Structure formats: C-alpha cells, structure tokens
Amino acid sequence: EISLEVIARRTPGFSGADLANLLNEAAILTARRRKDCVTMSEVDAAIDRVIAGMEGAALVDNKTKRLVAYHEVGHAIVGTLLQHHDPVQKVTLIPRGQAKGLTWFTPSDDQSLISRSQILARIMGALGGRAAE
Image (tube, rainbow, N blue to C red; front, side, top):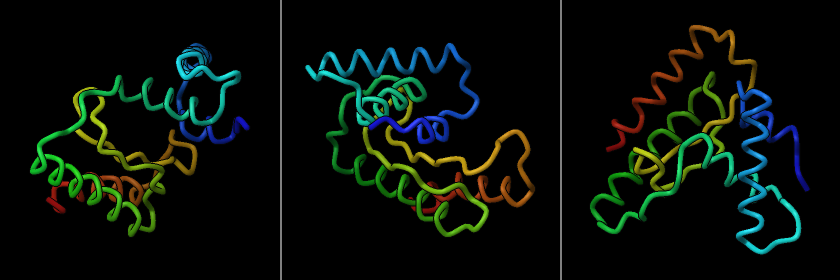
C-alpha cells in the first residue's frame, strides 16, 4: 500500500512537478518489473533515483567496498547517537551519481527553520563518515 505520509517525509521541498516526476519514475519501474500496480518498493526506488541519480556499477574492489562501508556506517552511527540528528532511513553501498554509497536520513520536522543543535548534529553526522574510515 502506498503511504503518502512516507512519501511526504522523504521528499521535503519537492514541488508538484517534482512529485509528478517521482510518480512517473515509479510507474516506469513498475512496468519494467512487469507488475500490475505501483507499490512502495517502486516509489522508494524512484525517490532514490530522482534525488541521488541513476545507479552506477557495483563496487567490485573489496578494499574500496570496505572503506565505503565503514564511511557510510560512520554517518549512520553518529546520526543515530546524536539526540538532535534526523533518524537514519537507509544505508546503501550502491553507487549513485558521484557517490559510492549513501546514508539517507528522514527529516523529522519542518526543515525551513532548524536549531543550532540540529545544525551541529548534521555537521557531526557528516564528519562521522570520515572519522569511521
């Protein structure tokens, strides 16, 4: 079942045209997968694709894969441990765009106004990847 609340939480700042593009991507993925109707699986994949870009080639070098894994887990652990950080939504080692891996956080509140503690938590979360390496 499609959850509009989940889509809204994962797509802050999207315009109506952005959301239309997102649902078109989800419909295309549904057709490629030879399914009858769009599910949250397709919507989730479409969100990743619209925000971060197309999937790149999978990492084959074990050293690179290990380093990227540590990096992304560092973001996730620091983000989880900090009180004012957004909750972790997903961690992936699938390259997208320029990124070799991604850690997704779900914004919990309105993002137009954020507190100093939230900004500091985001900075620490961003540095958590490098620290884990």
